[in-house]
Length: 368
Ligand code: G3I
Image 1 (cartoon, protein in one colour):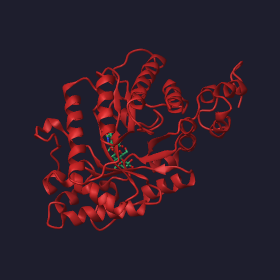
Image 2 (cartoon, rainbow, N blue to C red; image 1 turned 45 degrees about the horizontal axis):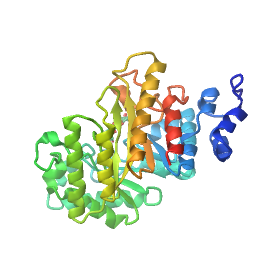
Image 3 (cartoon, rainbow, N blue to C red; image 1 turned 90 degrees about the vertical axis):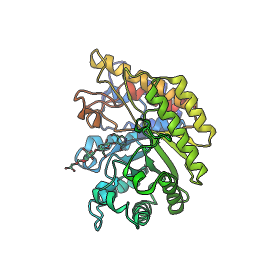
C-alpha cells in the first residue's frame, strides 16, 4: 500500500502518537478505502477505544453478506452493530406461528466473531408491529402476546445484546394529547402504562441489560422540537414514577443541514436528562445534505462541521459513551430513498473516510 508522496505511514503514525500505534495498525490493514485518505484517519473503533467510548453503525445481514469491502470496513471501524430493520417485530414474526431469526442470527454471529456488541433495535415501536399483532394486542391476552415477543427475542440474544431500545418514538406532540404521547396501536391496546410496563417486562427478562428509550427531533430551535423535548422529559419522569427503569435516552440524531440546530437548548435538555440519572447515547446519527449547495468537498465540510458541533455538545453536556451512526458509508444509506445524491455518513461511496470520519474520530478520542 503506497502512501502519497511526503505522506509516509510513519509520519501519520507519529502524528497519531505511540499510544494509538498498535490500535491504528490493527485498523489500517490493507482493506477498504486503502490509500492516503484511509491512512490519515484513525479508525473510529480505535479512536473510541482511546477515548474510552464505543462507536458503531446500523447494518443489514444482506449487505454484510454480499459486499466484502463494506464488511471489512465495518470490522475495522465498529465496536457495535445494530440491525437497521431485521430485528423489528414485523420482520421477525410476519405470522403469529412462525419466527424468522435468520438475519439477526447472522448479525449476532458476525458481532461475536469480531468482538463486537449487537444493539437491540427495537422491541416496542408504532411502525414495528406485524399486522396480526395490531389486533391480538387489543385482545384479553394482549399483555401475554407482548411478553412472549419480548421474552423470545431478548433471551435469544442475551449473550450478545447488552443494550436494548425497549420503546421507540412514543411521543408525538402534534397528536395534541395533553401528555404529548403518540396515538398508536400500543396506546389503543394498553393505555399510557404500556411504556412503563414494557420497561418493567424488559428489566424482569434481562435485569443486567441497558434499557433505552429511543427518540428523535430534540436538537432544534423550533416549536416542534421544543415540544418534543418537553414530552420526552415528561415520559422519562412518567416511567420513573410508575416504577419502570430507563438507563439511557437514545438520541437518534438524524440531523439535516439548514435545520435550526440549537446547541444551547439541546445542551440544557441533555443536562436535565443526565440529572435524572439517565445517560444520553447517540443511536442513529446521520447528517442530511439535501439542501446544501457546493461541490462534494464543500458539502462534506459542512456535514463534518455539524457532526463536530453536535457531538461536542453531546459530550460537553452528558456522560454519553456511545455513538452509533445510521449506516457507515454513503453507499448504503436509507436517506438516499429521499435524495439520491445525499452524503450523510462518515465514509463515501468508495469506502474512503470523509471529513466527517476525521471529525468523529478526533471527538471520540479527545473529548474525554
Ligand atoms: O431489503 C429488503 C428486501 O430484501 C425485501 O425484499 C424488501 C421487502 O420486504 O424489504 C427490504 O427491506 C426493507 C429495508 O428497509 C431495506 O431497504 C424493509 O422492508 C424496510 O422496512 C426497511 O425500512 C427501515 C425502516 O426503519 C422501517 O423499519 C429502514 O431501513 C431503516 O433505516 C428505518 O430506520 C428507522 C429506525 O428504525 C427508527 N428511527 C428512524 C429510522 C429511519 O426511518
